[in-house]
Length: 149
Image 1 (cartoon, one colour):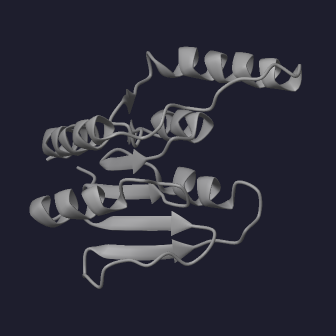
Image 2 (cartoon, helix red, strand yellow; image 1 turned 90 degrees about the vertical axis):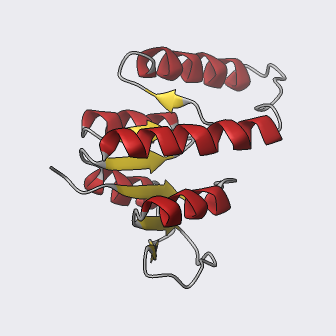
């Protein structure tokens, strides 16, 4: 069985502290992937990878390493799709899991929203990140990792 690990699309990830807490408790290694250096705790389970600032460099690095046993944390729908196809579990920072049955609708919605924005429609961005999102994320990450154990 593939060993459990967490891969984090970290540049705009609002739940890094929550990831560290769950990882330490369950003793799961974490790799923080970003385009620029991000401070991480000095801990043997936490690793940092800084990729080039090339387009999708962090996504490519994560997707190449996504596999069964990995939990990928990302809000990027296209990266989520790539990781699901590689057999990884994928979780949004809001605690919503991406699944093979939900990813198609998410990609379609993303395309519709991009078309509306391109047409000049004024659309609000995503809802503000809330305490409820943080709490849901903690529970979902814990559940995903325990399932993989």
